[in-house]
Image (cartoon, helix red, strand yellow):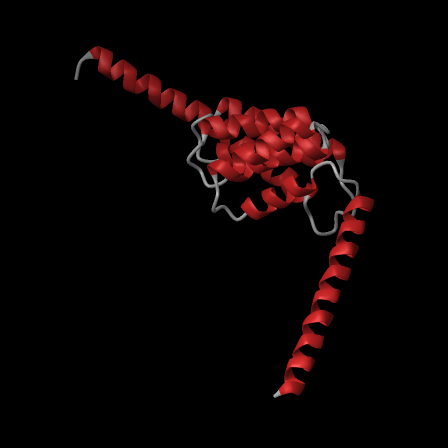
Length: 191
């Protein structure tokens, strides 16, 4: 074995040993904060803890981009940002997930969540429509494809408008059923 190979092996070993404990420490801290934030006895959302956890996820991902935990942490970070109402950060993190892990199963839901954020947090209905359509085109048989189609049908409608449409559809359905029953009764009398 030549000196250069030996030095390279020693350098890699040193890096692995020196990075190991800090990685383990970061994972341990993340797990403790997750447990605290998402504990069943937690009665309300703790923004300070959520912000701390978001920073810890981002730091871990930056320091350990190829780590097997990074995709999951990136997805969780994006969800925390989305649920905190920070649409810009959530969009950036979902984009990062889609770009870095396009073949992971959660890539499709990341695209769906982007559309949801555009619609509900950013109030950009044009971008929401564009993103829902892209989702349907890219993932037509995904579990959320029907949700995306429904979101497109209801895009920009107020809750009052949705209630009125539902009530009108219910009345129309009731009339159709009543009409069908009366035809069956009339038809039944003839035989």
